[in-house]
Image (cartoon, rainbow, N blue to C red; front, side):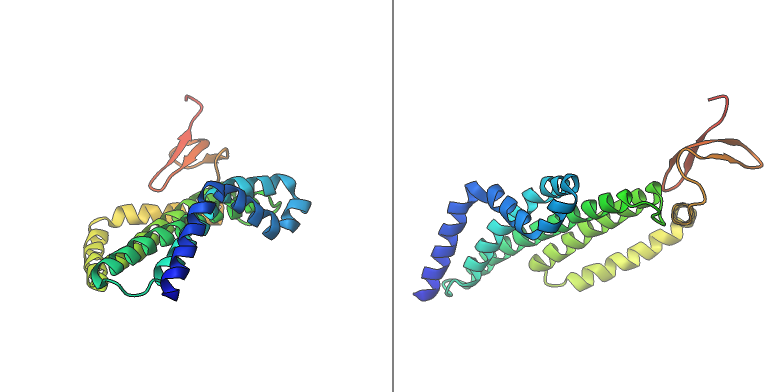
Length: 216
């Protein structure tokens, strides 16, 4: 009975706080980020705008998660299903929070003077990192529903190996682009000159870079 009572109380608290979740998130951010708010009000504003939404849902889904795990056993099939759904929601919100947090760290990094990586490199690496988080989050959530996830990943690994062998040129271009961005060989806006052409760098992509010559 105590388990049911605790679960009901947590669920009721979650429902009551749901309309005020953004205000609760603002309060939590103001308490955690006191130093940032005093030292850099503009950056604190960006932190608040970026993390308010995922943090508000993180609090609500966390209460719901706790309520589900404290429920006494009542039906193996339905209880397992409910817990999986809530786990999936909670995990998705966590990865959403981390996804947004990376954006804030990049904003902070770009604001620093004398940073070793340029804007182009940071933008590229940020996109790669955020894509990795999305993929990782997908597989973590999938693990709640699929029992043989290791076998699926192994199968994807074999398929990925075959695909990589068939796309060696593309991978070579990709690694070349990464090398250019990290080493800072050139960046957007730079004038470059080679044996075949010369012009201003307009875009550095994954496979190719765009250079505008004097003729447009």
